[in-house]
Length: 462
Image (cartoon, rainbow, N blue to C red; front, side, top):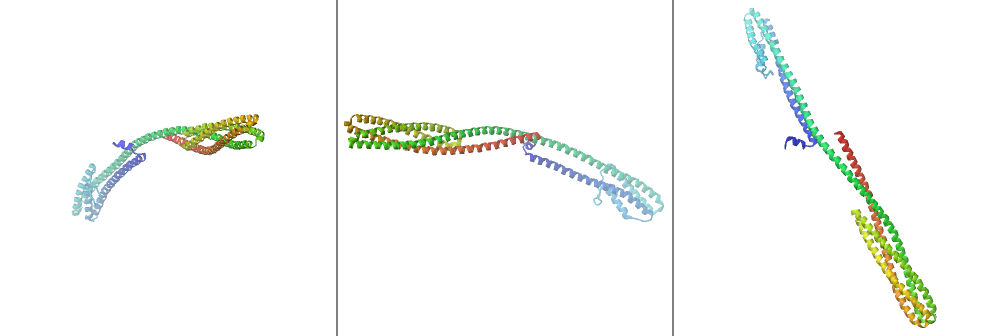
């Protein structure tokens, strides 16, 4: 992997750290180089200083000699300094001379110093050579001045070179910083633009998905609301059905009592033929009443059958809505299936009642014909009464079955009411869940809108 590829794969914060590290290393390098140049400039300053010392100390030495004061220590010190200015001296902190011009001048000073020392020795021997010593001193003064100027020029050259080098280093640092900054900025900008694009695309897709989910949620809430309304109607219908079943049961019980009374009348007619006519008339009235009760039971049975059909249809619709509701409607689907089973049982019971009612009507008609014939033929009352007793006995059994079936219908209707109540509660839970889902989707939509807005603002900044 190349360095460029490695840098491009780095995180933004790591790139900034790398840039800071490069700048720090460049600053440390520049600082070290500047310190080394300052040390060199310090050494140049000592050369200039000691060059001036040689010039001034030599004039002092000549004055001392003219006054008769000898100073060998000063001569020795000047020897050390002159030699140190050319070859360097660690004790004096003098570097070795490297500049050709200064080296040429300091060698001339060194030769003139030898001549001046010889002139001083000659003066010590013969004071008449004072002029020669002064002339050598003047020559030496001129040469030391030239050496001082040469040292100053060399020092100025080093200072100017330092300035130029620092300027060049600064320009190079600025160029490198601009290049590195441009590269990192472009890389960061590219990655930011790509990230912003991805965020914007993701937020747009999220907003579309949330909008679709919100629409589906509203549809589910509407379907649940309609199903709940239908179940409320079914609950009212079931309640009415239970009331009618109770009334049918009461009518059947009353009819059963009437049948028993009729049967007892037949027995009494057998015991007392004289009262047969009156008993037969009474029996005729009871038969008519029984027929009316049978007709009423028949109507109730048809109503129960229609209610069972309506219940079955509503249960089927509720099953469809439960399938649409998904996982949350699973329990509701089970309750709807139980409602359908109860509706089928109610329908079957109503069908059995209809069959029994037909038998009852046939028996009532037969009984009515029998009683009519009994009125015309009293001498056949015993035979007629016997047949009537059997008919009433069959009627009593049929009415007993009617009572049992009506009780079963009443029980089924109560169970339907309980099941419908559970369905209504389940639908209310689904409605609440749908509202909570809609609220959550609304919050997600707001978050998607804020995310999209943040991406848009970031795109404008970048």
